[in-house]
Amino acid sequence: QQQVKQSPQSLIVQKGGISIINCAYENTAFDYFPWYQQFPGKGPALLIAIRPDVSEKKEGRFTISFNKSAKQFSLHIMDSQPGDSATYFCAAQPRTAGNKLTFGGGTRVLVKP
Amino acid sequence: NAGVTQTPKFRVLKTGQSMTLLCAQDMNHEYMYWYRQDPGMGLRLIHYSVGEGTTAKGEVPDGYNVSRLKKQNFLLGLESAAPSQTSVYFCASSSPPERSGYTFGSGTRLTVV
Image 1 (cartoon, chains in turn red, cyan):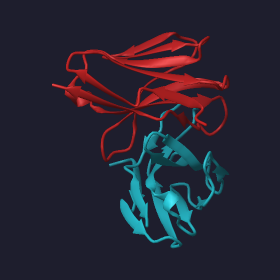
Image 2 (cartoon, each protein chain N blue to C red; image 1 turned 120 degrees about the vertical axis):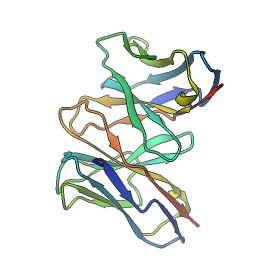
Image 3 (cartoon, each protein chain N blue to C red; image 1 turned 45 degrees about the vertical axis):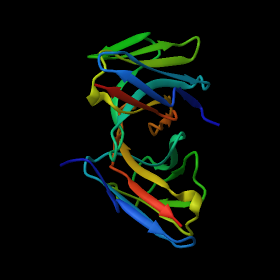
Image 4 (cartoon, helix red, strand yellow; image 1 turned 90 degrees about the vertical axis):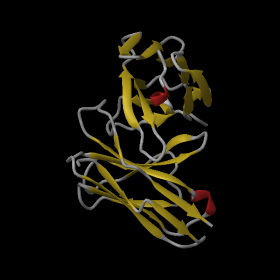
């Protein structure tokens, strides 16, 4: 039983297109929502994160949209580039000690040139 | 380079054998974690530690033990390996304040035959 559900499992997008990955959660104790990017053979790396007191956060070509009432959040990759081809994980963290993260199942993104 | 180092990078075990995975970080982080990554399941927390000498169970702790005798090291042990423990294992670290990102190691690919 995954506490954070992520979709789609895989995504193919043309260079210059928009990649959209969606996540949903049930635990209302979650109050911090990061996204991680993972390249083959490497560990995940923090990409961007949002708190539920804002509805959107943008960093370069990456934007998180957050809908607190629906308990959903999404990652948008604008002007997708071949170098963005990676696996993306959403995650959620409750307000407890230890910084424990619960991850979604991951989305493999392939950007075709 | 500063970061999280995992050893070994690859290992093949026979069912019933034991082994220890080592994680070392040189960032003076308080918190350390062991996750396993399986296709479609994302990353699932096995055990974690909020400081030297402390350990706690995560989401999937059965079949694993951990120790954190020194702040910089976090060991994951498999006492009697099973094929279900075939996975990629990631160690990560973070530090207060809460909501700081994780630094991940590059992973250990373990196959149990």
